[in-house]
Image (cartoon, rainbow over all chains, first blue to last red; front, top):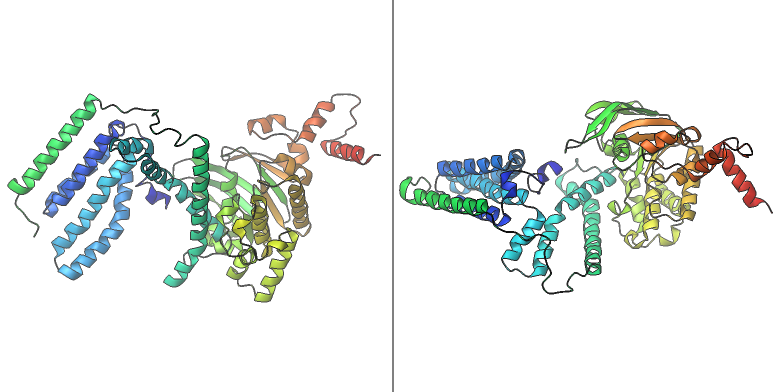
Length: 248
Length: 271
């Protein structure tokens, strides 16, 4: 479980990509995401995916992106089979399946290289209500904690003779009850405690609190953002006016 | 009998939690595992129940490798009360919570009822029999998890930080329970930072530091080794410290650290 989560959760890094302004990283991810939706052939999609892998290499998160891809591949197999059954077209089915992997990788690249604090700053840029930003960022921040909780709960219940692996599907679902109830109860209790702790530290005391770090876009950030937009424009243009359409 | 042979365990993040650990715990022994946070104490005991499998070496429980059994199979022999009781409580009532493991192990209903009543009475939880375990206080939850473990009568009982959230009276009761378990031939392994709690039981003490065992011996001897305890960031029991400070004086009334306890108890009971 922790192995899979490594493909989606932020860990501090020192790469050039990590150091980019989070808004630029978000822009790059949005552009990669959009490009994935624009592709019309498997070849174009392979090109986009190769670009994403290059970005992952620059960000030095190749292994973690490989985890994202491995995990997503499980679902994309399902998408592939479902499409093949209903459309009967192998190429279309493959395109949809791989497109799903590419979409997840494009978003995962943003989340695994952007800290919750940076995420908060990005959301503030869009003038979202502070409570909404706080709730979202806290949820993201608590994902690793909940994963750890899940593992510890599973350990505790397995130590009381609970078999999680064996049995039919109904039994397996029933066996999840001793895992899910403590997990939900702990989360509710934790959120209550967190709310009290936040209020005890003057959360909500003023309408516009100050920030510890104010993000300023550097020249590098501006150059990277412009290059990303230019590359996107060129790619989109080539998809529609240069490369032949292969996707029905 | 539990045996670790050259066990090495590395976490997914690359941290070596156990480094060539070899340890033998005989049946009926009471062993305390001490050491600072991150020393590898909980990782060590998780190997006994097969929750973690060694990267190198192996762990034997009653002569069987833990890698060849599931945790559910091993837990019939080894009961572990984990540090945080909130990680296991889920049932509608305290008695149902207690019977969970017993039902998993296929105990007949009349024996389940008998074991549940015994456990609730032993830990003073009888009045909460029909209450939700979630409404109990921290200390009561902790006692419930211990009762849950003892209910199925495992050969080995592992207690991970059992004194967290317990007041002094409950700690004293816990000491009595551990003594009772020892007297009935159970193997008891206690992982704790609470040296004052461990000291009266006079267990065999295993000191861990950075995934290695750096000290192993009876409490009266090991607790005198100030340098070792300092390096492993383990506090010395107050009584031992008291004894050591007085020993150089010619009029010291103590022969050994245990004598200090007897001396204090004698003064308390004196008119």
